Amino acid sequence: MIPISKPFIGEAEKQAVLEVLDSGMLVQGPRTAALEEKWAAACGTPFAVATSSGTTALQIALLAHGVGPGDEVITTPFTFIASVNSILYTGARPVFVDIDPDSFNIDPELIESAITPRTRAIMPVHLYGNPCDMDPILDIALRHGLAVVEDAAQAIGATYQGRCVGSFGTGCFSLYATKNIMAGEGGMITTPDEQLVQKCRMLRNHGMQRRYYHDILGYNFRMTDLHAAIGLAQIARLADFTEKRRANAAYLTSHISAVVTPKLKEGYGHVFHQYTVRVDCGRDRDAAARQLNESGVGSGIFYPVPANRQAYLVEMGLGEVILPVAERMAHEVLSLPVHPQLSQADLEKIVAEVNKL
Ligand SMILES: *Cc1c(COP(=O)(O)O)cnc(C)c1O
Image (tube, helix red, strand yellow):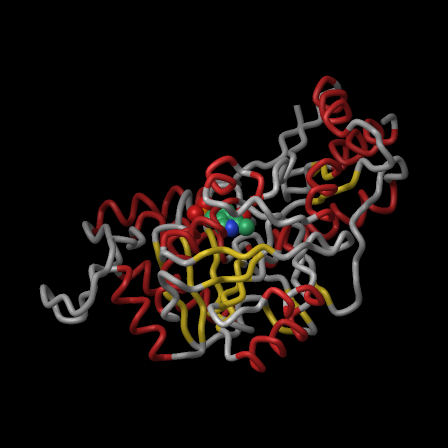
């Protein structure tokens, strides 16, 4: 079976963890600080703050921007549920805006009509590693005085008009095991704003600046140095991994004919966290996934249900909204293996089996 994802764990990762164990400095120590520095450099932002996960990065970023009960945050329904949950954890309400069928990302043209006096922030999600159309989003945010919290969990290294995602607003990343680079678990916040950095650092560590003086209600959202050590070994591989993902995606696109392949747009540096095709025109996507599976090609459906249709969100009254594009994409999308560990034989097999669909 060719798996849909496969974490790369080399000698450097193993050695790095053993060194931390020997050092005795296990949590938020020198490795965490070193990873923050490397991450900020990779994203072209002055600062980065490490957290325990991508979800807690999003939660802290929203809280640091003052998002809370009574506020609304505009986002996409077509995302991993963590984007939406991070908004709910602050006490704010997610407001869903439909997506663009070519990019699968939030449609900037629909954002403005969703703004109300309660709107505090926009959370674009760079889904599958494909950057959102940031210029109109930043323009709307500026005109309405809204914060922009980018969910870049799937998009480390992706660029829009030459600039890295995570450097447009407040960037939030994940180092979960299946992401483009990983630490098992972990998260990162990027920002140019030094005051925001101080708030994020306090929020992740029980509201503490001076030891055992707690100025605000904070959390334990710290990164361990064991995770940071793995992250450091991985970030050294980022350029290589990204190049391989892009080359694999290019091969798939030039050889697959039976389904709709991802569209690459000028100015968008996609990093192919997922290579997502559309099984369209009324064909049965789930049957296609089963057929691939039986022939030894793994696939994934990201995501089968838009957030506004999840049971608990319907119960909260968030299911009223009609989002036809997200609804249709949830029935058509199918992600194929594109990870850096695929061989040429794997790629050929994926193409051959997909073209039989
Ligand atoms: C993975 C992911 C997250 C959450 O990251 P965790 O590290 O798993 O908490 C948030 N948003 C998106 C789009 C993701 O893919």
